[in-house]
Structure formats: C-alpha cells, structure tokens
Image (cartoon, rainbow, N blue to C red):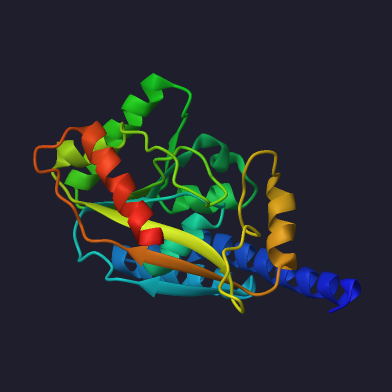
Length: 248
C-alpha cells in the first residue's frame, strides 16, 4: 500500500474515532441520566466495542470474565487504549492517573464513567484513593487498576505497586489478574504500534495506531484470587507473576 493510501486510511480511522468520542460525550450528557446502572454498563461496553472497531482493532477475550459482584481487576499497562479494551470486555470503574482528567473529551468521558483519579506522586492522595476504592468495593462496585503505575512496551511486566491491593484486603474481595497484549492481526506477532511509553505524545501514539495495519488486542482473564492472609506486597507480587504467565 502506498504512503498516500496509508495516510488516507489512517485519516478515515481517526475521523471515525473522534466522531465516536463526541457521540459518547453526547450520550453521557443526554442518555445516561435516564439509565439504570446495568443500562449504563451495557452502553459503555457497546461504546468501547465500537471504538475498537473504528480503530480497526480486533478484540479477542480468553478465559472467563469474573462473576457478578465486587472484585479488583488488575492488568498490565501498555497503552491509552487499555481502558477501552477492558471496558469492551468487562465494564468496571477505573483508577487512573490524574492527567487523564484533563484530556479533551476523554477526561469528561472518564469522569462520567466513575473513574477515580490519583496523583501518583502524592502519598497522601494515594491513601485517599485507596480509602475510596475500599468503600466502592464494599458497596459492590467492580474496580480496575494498572498497578505498574506507568505504561511499558509489553516486553515484560513492571513491578506492581502494592498500595492499591490494600483496598481489596480491606474490602475482602477477590483480585482478578488480567493480561493484555497487542498483535499484528495478520502475523500474530507482538505489536508496539498502540503502546504509549517514554517520550510518546498522545497525538503521536494515536496517529501511529491508526496508521498501523489492522491490530488485534488479546485480553486474558485469570482465575480470581482471595488474599488468604497475604499482605499487600506479597499479594501484589503473586498477582504480577500470574499476569506474566497469562501473557505467555
């Protein structure tokens, strides 16, 4: 495919994705106030599935999603797309870095979806968020976190920050390991096109994603784990090992 055709294809994907973002924002403002919690979750799931389709990203889910009820989903972190991928497979409230709250449109959608924002450099703010996480889990919410604390290129899983696991211990709910990987949809080889790491900018990562050949994202659910007396550091290490195994 010539460079011009690649750029035209990428532009078409980008325009459709941006229009879909606007549609999501309008749904949040107009439709969400009339929906039940179950209705909101279904709207979010369908929106996320369609968002991946507009970006020419195939979603493959392996394993069983956790049964209804409170749980903490714990995943490795590769891209700004990870939240969309997980919402397409299993709607949940996310804990995300505070920067996202200020992203155009995306920040508004994240707030509308009940995202808890954390200032990762602030120990006090981390304690505040862990408290709110525990309260949400006790109330029956399903939460999702990326305890690496930053994105990676997918070659390995970074060490997990243990603080967020305290919320699951305090609320006495299971943790579900989740592994994510992006692949070339034709060759099946690992792809870094959608990664968002180091000096990447959001718009640069977005353009690289829409310019790439068709991608596949594979999400693998592991078995729910109870704390079984483990402290947060031990549990965080064990769940990281589980996520590494699920990536293989």
